[in-house]
Image (cartoon, rainbow, N blue to C red; front, top):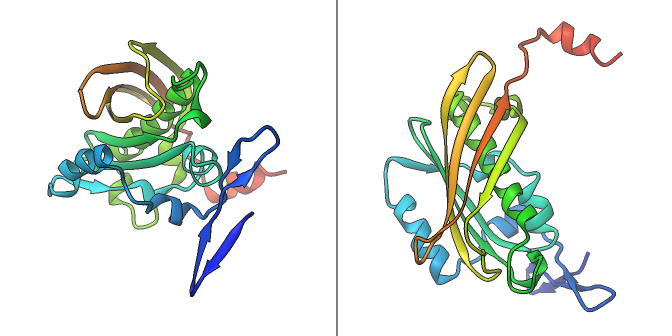
Length: 213
């Protein structure tokens, strides 16, 4: 880690890696509240200013928020909002440049897939009542059984995108979801995706403990 103290504040510094790359080390909370660029600020405003949406990225601190966020800053922004009725989620994401590329200047398709997978997880959770819980359960996010991504146009590594996802069908413990990713400034379709999530079987506390042995 590389933390530098400025007065009473501790701020994150990039660590220079072998080969010239940089790794970032900061808390998830510090990364989550980084200043937004102009494109992200404009995209976020439509949700912040609406009473129909609520910010929910504080409900989870793993996956994309850590690996591509606080630890590397490959994603400068991932702010996710849910409709209060649980019918849809929207995530505003700003990419951090070459640290998330495959081809030069183009976001790696694996990053796109991870963002869809994470946002689908939130969509699945809110459709299953996550917003109504006093102590949100990670089990409401479910498990990814299938993820299919169609890459429609190159995603520029310095761009900001808007990802929208919603549940389209429920069948027992199965949840089918669909979503798309668009350039936040132009509205151009970058990718669309479908997913199948499985909710875990309900178990008693005793059954969970016995499962450890």
